[in-house]
Image 1 (spheres, helix red, strand yellow):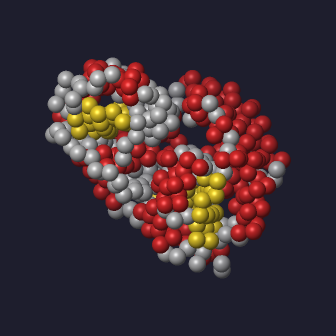
Image 2 (cartoon, rainbow, N blue to C red):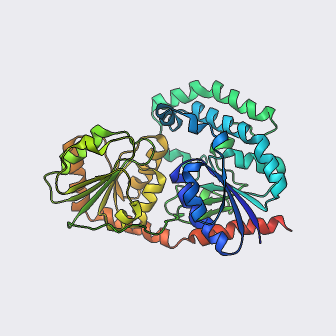
Image 3 (cartoon, one colour):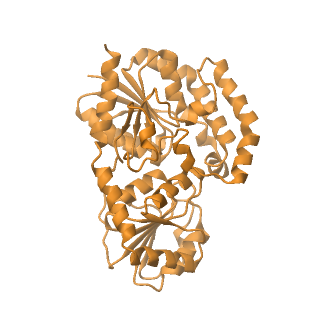
Length: 394
């Protein structure tokens, strides 16, 4: 029996893919401790792990909604948050690991404190990457505007200042790339297929592309019309009442069934009386909807896109960050979706009609789905982790 410790950031898109892996490890008789945040507690404990709360040490939890938006767009600010959290965790986590003596640490690629403590204490380590794996080759898909490049160059002095704070505490970090880039010498689980991952052939054999980890359906969604449109802008940057209102205006006089998930930052009462064919929810079982949907209007978070394509559902894409832009670009390259530049009523309706009229979008989505289903999934991820555990005992 192995003892395995997970670390993750407080984001559903980063936590959800790991839950199937936790279930698989626990089912095989291994012990799992999972360091995360109280808003994730229920789902982590339901997967069978021992939950360890990190709320007292987490800097992201103290951010305003405006700051939370900056995390995805401002590299210097993101680096500050990661460094602040790593240093806040330092003493407590090192003491915990020395007492627990785990066989392996598995940390989300953004939970750099997990990797840092593994390096510091010599504990075998596996990186859990819920976005695309990132190196100099795959980075080409993350196209940045000239303005974004200028902002990044201007922010480098601040970034270096934060990196030096880690170095002073004994962390072997040379640059920001050590935080955001995947290392070819590190065992890494990537929750996508080799076909969907850009430049997958440029990564070492330490990488396991296991495909999306899609949880079981919880609720039953009734499909009441021939075509179902699902709309969601994710769980973070979703305070978008005007955009949702334009969607309602676009589809109110159509034969389409529309299900829209808007999060907690928008009041459903603000929409007034809804057309008969449109339903709006604060939250809904996304997996259940996507099993029935014909098209997904999405912000293009990696988790949402993976779930959509897993069920062969083509996308209409409205990325909000450079990371989401990279995901959208990959979907566009593979022909499984349409990027939307304008968000007026005519553009929404035109894009949906185009995807429905051209069967190629659904065919390309189905091809990606086949690749996902050929991957090893949670079992393959668990195998990778246990392989690292076994090596540590040699």
